[in-house]
Image (cartoon, rainbow, N blue to C red; front, side):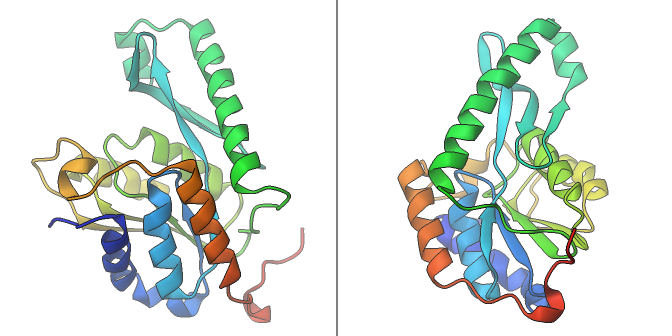
Length: 227
């Protein structure tokens, strides 16, 4: 399976998620690349769109090697990969400094993407977390654990593509996992897209504004209970 771009991947993913339309879900995109996919899913399911902002913690001198991931918000979550930390001989002090550095970027994105607005309430809702694909799963695992702490009624992970071992390892984190394509010969998410150009901050802001203009009213019988 191949996707022309993230928008096409989102439309195909939405078809596979059609059974959740009547559950009045909340859709959460993972910035940046997951947002165009999530936008299509939210539009086809007539669901509100929000974000779960997660940042990879990179190893010293190897920023693409994930030693863990960090999610900020009402329910912050840090997930570390002890095997990678041990293999790369990463000192604890570095982990703390890297987490602090990524927290600055998370808060920058929060301020840019949600100026003056609070995240959507997730308690008691069906929540669908969407990304454009998963490789190792370190970042999405942190995102899922943070969302789970917000007490949704049902947590769903939906992605166009991910390797089989990653899919298997993430099933325990969610109530349902929808992955359109799970090939053995997986090298990178981008190999399954004709157009995998970078999603910018401006793209995310534009898509969120468009989604808010058409956001549905939450039915009274599905509104989250008060704290």
